[in-house]
Image 1 (cartoon, rainbow, N blue to C red):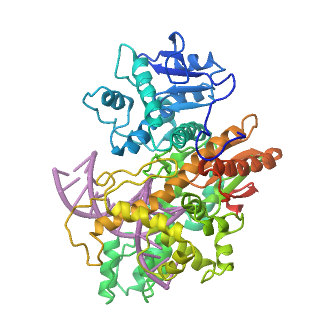
Image 2: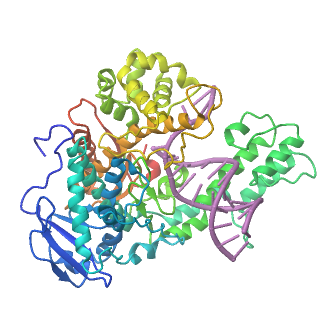
Image 3: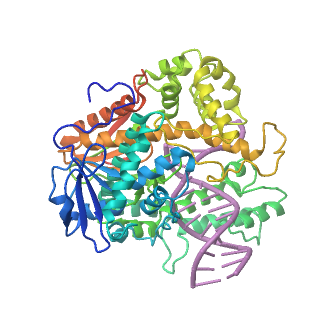
Length: 573
DNA sequence: ACTCCTGGCGCC
DNA sequence: AAAGGGCGCCAGGAGT
């Protein structure tokens, strides 16, 4: 990758293995394949193979597979023991390109893309698959899906792909868009591989943790002992004869009302300001109740099999490009439960966390000289900020910066916002401009060109009743939209970085036994033999740095990973 | 019995 | 100290 300058033109196929192949599955599960030239046109005859697995297996030298959707075909390849080097996911690309063209939220399936291309009625995307609590079958049951042109399923794929190549070239920064499409496609491969691998999970440690915190379960079912005790304690605190169900907010609000305390909700932060003996056990109840319902014995039984927690990741599942998961809540593993994430014997977890993504990304996209200088250090950015004359300590510096990115409207962060604006005018100006664009109904884009959905497609309607709530500057909805677009450019550009980082890391790990088992916005976990851990840690660091250079071009901004090599996730910093 | 909505809180 | 951006998930309750 030497010679990469800036974000443009970074993604190019090289070498003899750079042959692209298109692959389309027929309704019967057979596969039609043909080689492609650089422009996406057929460069050889169409071959028919008995299956996608057979087609890919027969062409080990293929540099990139162009297919309808990685999620639809790759899990079956992996199940058959077949990995691919690179892919191009036409439906993922369609979502990004159609979004860039101002139509975020509209159908992105291949049939929809093909229909648009030919001016035909556009079919809706198939509804998301219902989850059944058991992730196992869904990974492998996803069968071949019909293409719009039944007579020649390859034709629609080739037409849409060729058109996409041309549309990417018409964007303001074609190199960036091509990098985004390649990165998103690579992310799809990573997601399928990671879903298959699963997070190493000790059910035994998990059960021990549950019993320790929640107590035993009663034989007849129902709440575990600690929850029952705390519920009893809460009731007692309201007085003799009082019965309060702490898991029912309305019940709790009524009980406090009888005690002369008016609550608007039972949120923890509101309860904490209340002086009443029921508050303390109630807060402890809520904490444990959350653990019980979200990560308790039921979760364990549904999601952990053979020592692994397998979630189904959906790259780009959110508007900003962040991933989501289909079930199991893999991206919300509570800190306390991380004790159950254990490397296999003789193996290690390389836990890597990219520190202070928001300010680093903001520095890179705004090119604010002062903020870039602060972000040029690999040290804790907020600490550097507070040492270098920012009016406040580390926490205040952090609050001010995050407040600027999130569009904070009140509170402590706001006090220091003025200082922030003086010191980093280009950075604050960048997010302010994004907010203004949102309020005025315009679209904003991430650094690589991921585009926010138009108003109305994201739950923010700009033209509902006028007047707002009197704070000026348009309706409440317009201001909400402004906060969304303000945040979008930063969070989404961080997601741009993340997919390229994943793509790079995946390549770095080729040839090692190490496996990528977890990804969460700005954090990755690699599971590897102990002796590979130093190399894996170095691979992660390189991937983070490389992604920063490739995505954002020549800036002094660094994207350092904090890396810990541990046997248990809970032991990582 | 089902779906849809809400409250609340887990993660970033 | 205050409560803002993105999500998923669960339980309960309302509506059908």
